[in-house]
Length: 308
Ligand SMILES: [Zn+2]
Image 1: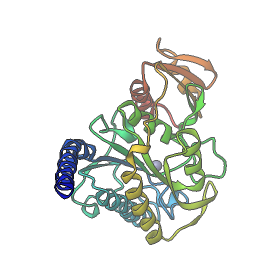
Image 2: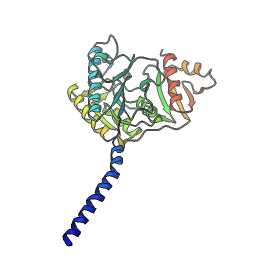
Image 3: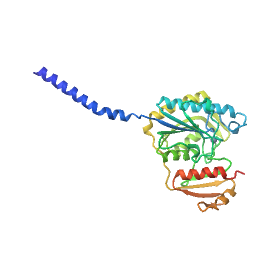
């Protein structure tokens, strides 16, 4: 009786454990994300080794070499994303003419967005269908001293840009667009000043990969490209495996944008429009219903404002 009682009790325990496990199984399976869709926006100023204009545009002394290195850093990020289980990756070529990444050297499993104009600029193509965003090779805003090529959108056109009264970086615009669609930025790479500015102004939890220590606007102490790539792959994998810890960055709605131009004639002409307010000689204000409307406005004036 005792033994038999024990046996039945054991069977009952095993049976209830089995039912319990069977009940939990669907939850366990549903907790595993079926898809991991990653949007990678790639700029060039924050790639290791990039220090001045000689690396940054067609015809410049080292541009062709640094297109290859930019593409290789992008591939390193893609490797990390696939290692974390990415099922879809889109890359946005977000520098200069939007044609710097070499398509034939890019991982063939990803899609590549190229060239301008595009309304959402460095984040064109992102939407609620993505689970994570990565800002690779980004640089600091014009308000950060001693950072490599620090500017916001255009070093020729804009002296300053503010969103809801705060100095804006390109990373803030990109993170705000991703956040509009509920997509968190999980990783940034660039120089130490850019990474620090992004973590302080957007979210300190964003994983930062510092590929160079900025010594000034046109100088940096750089990691070897191979070392930078290894760090980017490892950090991307780690960040995406911890996707649940990141939150989308959101900007106020409606959103007030202020731009101070280097050439005040731009402010004068834009103020002809009833949607634009001129708040001092070189500064205009525009209020959009959200970051998408504001970004479309910035994109328009990036194309049509005067740099001289
Ligand atoms: Zn750039």
